[in-house]
Image 1 (spheres, rainbow, N blue to C red):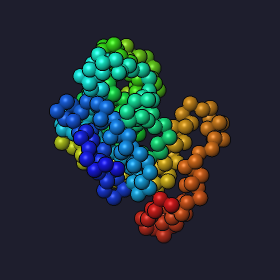
Image 2: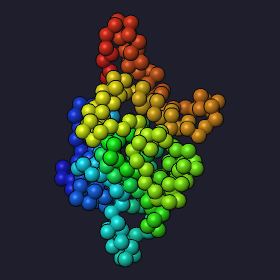
Image 3: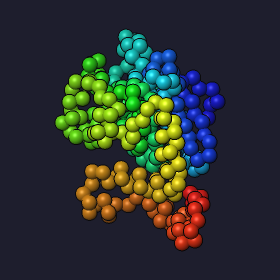
Amino acid sequence: MPEARECVRYEKHGHVARVTLDRPQVLNAMNLRMHAELAEIWDDFESDDDIWVGVLSGAGERSFSVGQDLKELVRRVEEGTATSTFGSRGQPGWPRLTERFSMSKPLIARVNGYALGGGFELALACDIVIAAEHAEFALTEARLGLVAGAGGVFRLTRQAPFRIAMGHLLTGRRMTAARAYELGLVNEVVPAGELDACVEGWLEDVLSCAPLSLRAAKEAATVSATLPLDRAFATRYVWEERRMLSRDALEGPRAFVEKRLPKWTGT
């Protein structure tokens, strides 16, 4: 992977990868360079077996991400090099996080401010969302003549009550972190000064679990979300098959019987 990145910071410590959108001067708006860098990062995140969980955040104290870099978009439209619709196939950074439907490692979104447009769509694509009290969420695309094409139209209507979701999609209205929590879109809301400690607490709990169990649970939950219950039970899940035959599947019960903490290997 290239060492020099302009728009994203990527750090790995132990079993945790931290991905930070790093354009705070424009509230972490996402340009094509950022998308290209993120694609390389997500490839590495998925392929590195020593990494069990990721944290996605935005640099600075004001914004997770305000979505697409509109100045860049205007320039590309005027040049005749840009149209936008659902998905990112054929564009830099494809497949983007919002379209990596087979990603089985858990992702925690650390939302420290604005999560608007594509920024909200990134949060919706994560598994656990922790927000500072001052965070705001919105899909503002319709106010700009655009559409929430990175999954916002599809994910918000699945993750929030349908009529509530439509109200936001058809108005671009913002919601507070507290409201997002009420709707089940956020796992926890804390004062800004406690955000990092809260994320670390969630990380500690995630890392106490067997990594293959995490991947099996995420895969099964996402794949079966729209299946009838009988088909959900009968469907083949790749990561569950790996977990079932793993050393960790024995290590967990053995550690419990021996009254000690398990030593997960991910194998």
